[in-house]
View 1 (tube, rainbow, N blue to C red):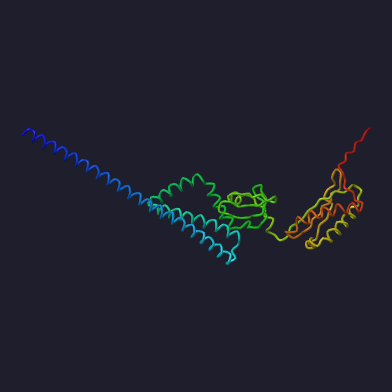
View 2 (cartoon, one colour):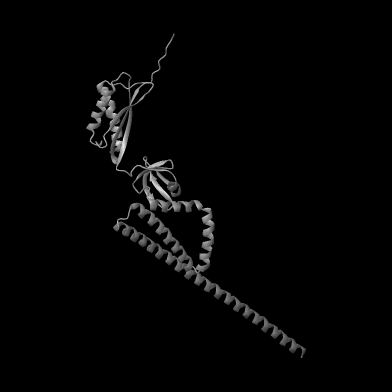
Length: 293
């Protein structure tokens, strides 16, 4: 009898252990199923996000090209075109990032709140860039210069290549690309050499004491009259400007078209040197007279 009871107890223990093993396997299967479901869901979200990113990039490129063609058809000024294209591209890329994050399953409401909080912090850290953005809008509105103008500002001179949201890109005379902040360009002194159609060229020529200034003026008038690039209205101006230590200085002022400025300046220097030598008009050297008792 005792042996029978022991056998029953042993069988009950075996049954209990078997039930535990079955329960453990069931829990493992549940966890595995949950992990597989999470991986499938995450993989689906990642695949959708990749598709959204690729399609979004294609759409952004298409909209940028569409905007560029529309601005060109409407003959919008190049300055405004570059600014608008840069601004629209940044806005479209921000929308694309939000769409990709949403496709990943992130709550866009909380993400937008996070972006707003981050925007405040970034805005405080990048207050200079906000100033540059405002400067770009001021440049776009009041147009102190445009793309293609030769300007000088903030210690840099060059041709305006682009006016972006935060920077104005200048190409210097020696082909350097310089990025100047719009905030500085909008609030600082800017010299625009291309705004007017004509520009005045000046030379100061020194001749020896004893040289007839009338002969020098007549020769200079003849030289200026032979250059068709020099305008007759306003009439060229020639006058004695200073009696310097070693020379009598003659000031010459003439008006030319904007695009002829440097050509006339350098060519006239060469012509004056050659014609003065032919006419026997000497250029003085620095002299010092010493009187000895």
